[in-house]
Length: 211
Image (cartoon, rainbow, N blue to C red; front, top):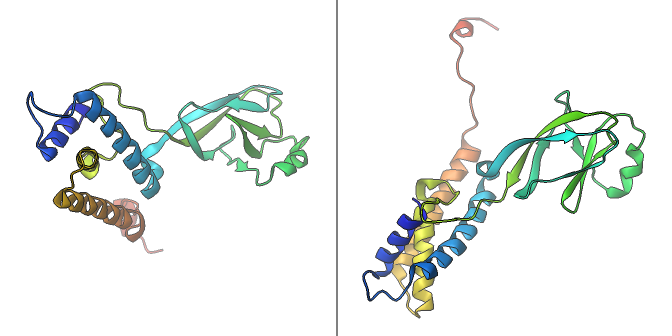
């Protein structure tokens, strides 16, 4: 769903349509934004792989620090130019141990930058993957960056619940529906992430070989 569809769904849940509707579009949009941020964090905690991007650092000689993306949350992995993993520096006090190491083997964070040790001595490209902050909804055509199966319904239900609460009303049915949606989502992610390990596809050319 896009924001317009979520807002219309929320209006249906609180039974507010037409000229006498108490809630303006702008007010509901604010509640949608709050619900979106809440459940983006919810999905990120269940499985952050929905919120990952690939990028690369353009390394220059004698430069230790490089700017992180504005939507950066956390590094998943970073490799050197030979595709070898660069590991995190566990203790900033150990930085001096990697100066004059003559090879980049560690990274660490300083405010909105990432530092590499040893300090690179030549231009390189370091590919990496990171967890990002979901983008805000800019207009009615924008869609929340959540898994759309059940995620959009959850945002609409939370929006309606908050609107009713601010009107000093309670909908036990709607509250129970939201709880059930969250329960279903948790069960789906639990099965996907823990019960079933990804299996490589079979290779007919190898099926008949006896190892």
